[in-house]
Structure formats: C-alpha cells, structure tokens
Image (cartoon, rainbow, N blue to C red; front, side):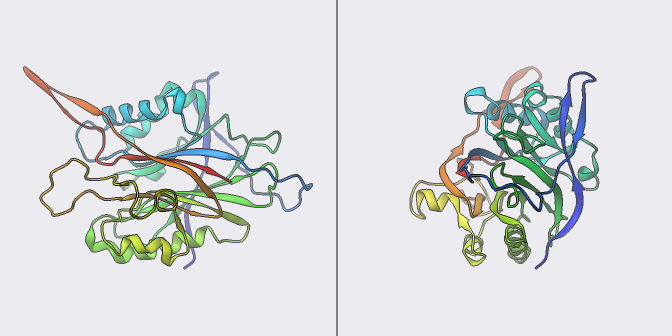
Length: 308
C-alpha cells in the first residue's frame, strides 16, 4: 500500500534576535557524494502521549515536558502525541525548547485545523544541523502522511541523513494509530502503510514510534506480520519486564487492564536500551478545598537508545 503525503512540513529554529521561530530549509540526500567511512551513531528518543482530553492539558503538558527536558537525561529526539493547539503554543514558548531544539509545526497551525490534536517532533540542535559538515546528522524532508483512518490520523515522518553515507537516509515516523477496539481493521492497514514507508527507495530503514493503541492480541501480531522488530520485545523478551504504558494503577469499568499501547517498531536500526518513563502528578486546585492530584497523562512514555 503506497503512502500518500498529506502535506509537507518543516523544522523551525528559534531566533533570539527577533524572538520568532523561523523555518529552516531541509534537504534531500544528494545523488552523488564523496565516499566516506561509515560511522555508527547512537541516539536517544522519548515518545510521550500528552493526553488531550483530561483536565488542565497545558499545565500537565508543561510538567511532562519539564521532566523530558531535564539536562542530565535530555533526549536527542522527542515524539509527542495528542498535542492540542494550546499545548503547541506552550511548547513553542518553552525557553529550553527555544534554546536547544528544532521543532515541527512552528510555521503555522495547519496540522491542528479540524482535528482535536496532532503530533509534533523535536530534534536536538546539538545532534542535527542543516549541512553535511562535521558529525551531525542533517534533517531531510518532513511530511505528514495520510493514513487510512476513522479519525483522520496521519503520521509525521522525517528523514535524517548521516554525514558519513548521505545517499541513504534513516526515517523516523511519529504515530498515533486509531483508538478503540472497533478500529482494528484501520490499525491493520495503518501498520502496512507505515512499514512500507521504511522500505521506499533511498530509505535505509528507521523506526516508527508512538501510541499504537495496541489493545487486542491481534494488535501485537502486526509488527511481525509487517517485518518489523518490536524494540521492547527485542530487549526484554515477550515474557520479560512488564512494558505496560497505559491503564497502570487505574481502576477501569470497560474491562480493559494495563496494556503496552505505546511501542517502537524498527527496521535496519539497533535498539540498545529501553525503559518506561513514569509520570508525576499534576495539581488541580479546588477553591476553598484541598487540591486534587491527577496523573500528567494516561500514558507512560518510552525512552529508547538506538544506533544507526
């Protein structure tokens, strides 16, 4: 199943001189380059669903992002799902984001029109640059890829171009697959489309990460069926460390227990370490009463170290 590019997007960098986000030009991998020694590079990635529908989304997102951006564990790549328009504004105003990251969807709000939320991506400016000099990878084209979806979901895809072998790209895809049990046929088609993205000409593989909404046993077979490696299973085994990212410690009335809804699927990259990013609590003030405290999201995040 061929992928359909819904719209081209871009990365932006914050310019302190005029205090505005400015688009930066991405480049395609060149057709001809001088042969260089191929080097292995290690990256860290965090994927996190922000939970758009619980109360105080901006306050909760700020707490989550603050934890993600802690200096000692700051990742090179950040995938975010369920980002509302107001949360997008908050992200773009975050001083740490402005100082240290390239961000998608700063140029306009097109991706947030007509939908309750969208995905965003951040790349560390320490690890990525817009030329082929030095040892930094270069971001290539950014696009939103239309998926067969009941809810109008799309995938946010970017190629990263190695400095040593820039003819071949590594593709990073941020996803939020269709929710709920009745949409398994959509998720099945979505995974086929996504797997094909990693096999397009010029793409040397990559990873797909985010909220897979894997709530049924059939969902957990889709990566194998599409020739993809489940990073958590590769590192911890099917019966190893519990990888539940949703429904943990929550009493539900729909019969659904804790589940490994969030995943990283790989092709042509190697997973090195992977852990669950557990959440704090967000205060909900109540006038004249003690505050309530709710989880920052209904999803835990995932942190992955991998090599390209």
